[in-house]
Length: 309
Image (cartoon, rainbow, N blue to C red; front, side, top):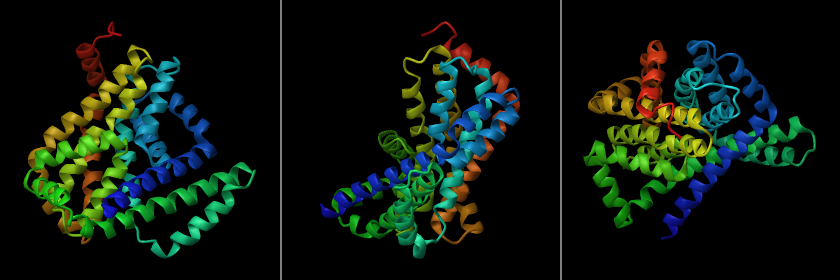
C-alpha cells in the first residue's frame, strides 16, 4: 500500500513539475507565443512549424491546444487556420519525452535548490528561470521514482495482474493508456510512467508503445474540455485533434510489433526506444495529413457541422 501511495505521489510531483516548468516558460514568452500563432497561420506548413517550436518550448501540447481554442473563441483565429497548429502540437510534445531520457541525475538537487532560490526573486526573468529549473528537476526526480518503484509495485497482486494483461494485449494497453492519460490529463506523464516500468524490465516494449499510442488519444480530453462553451469553431478544433489522433492510432495498431523491433535496433535503453517511437508516430501522422489539411478541415466541418452548437 505504501508503494502505491508513493506512486500516486510521484504522479502528482511529475504533473506539478510540468506545470511549474510550463508556468516559468509562459511567463517569459507566453504573450509572444500567442501573437506568433496569430500571425503564422496563413499557411498550414508555417503554422505546423511554429506550433512544433511553441509546443516544444512550453513542453505541453495541451497548453498549446488550450491557447489555440482560446484564440478561436476570441475571434482571433478561425478553425481552418488552426489545422497546422494541431498537427504541430503532436510533434512538438515528443521533444519533452526525448528530453526526459537524458541522464542528469547528479544535477537534480543543485537544480532544485537554485530554482527554489530564484523563485523568491521579484525580477520576472529570475523568478521564471527558477520555475523552469525547479519544475524540470521535479520532473526528472519523478521519472527516477517511477523506475525505482516499478519492481516493488509488481509485488502488489493488482498491479501484477494489470501488467500481465497489458503485456498480452496491444488493444488493452491502448485503452489503458487512453483512460489513464485522460484522468491525469498529461500524455507526457503517462509516457514517463511507462518509461519507468520499461526501464524496470517489467513491461514489454510493444506494450509500452501501445500505451504511448493510447496516451495520444487520452490527451485530447484537455482540448475538448477547453472547447465546451467556447463556440462551434472551438469545438471543431477539438474534434479535429481527436480525429487526428484516433485515426492515426488505428492505422498504427498493426505495426506495433514492427515499431518495437525497429526501436530496439536504433537505441539500447528502453526509455529511449519508446521516446524515438513516439517521435516517429507523431511525425508520420502529422506529415501524412499536412498536404490534405484543407480537405481534412472541410471533412471535420462536414461531419460535425458548422451549424451545431
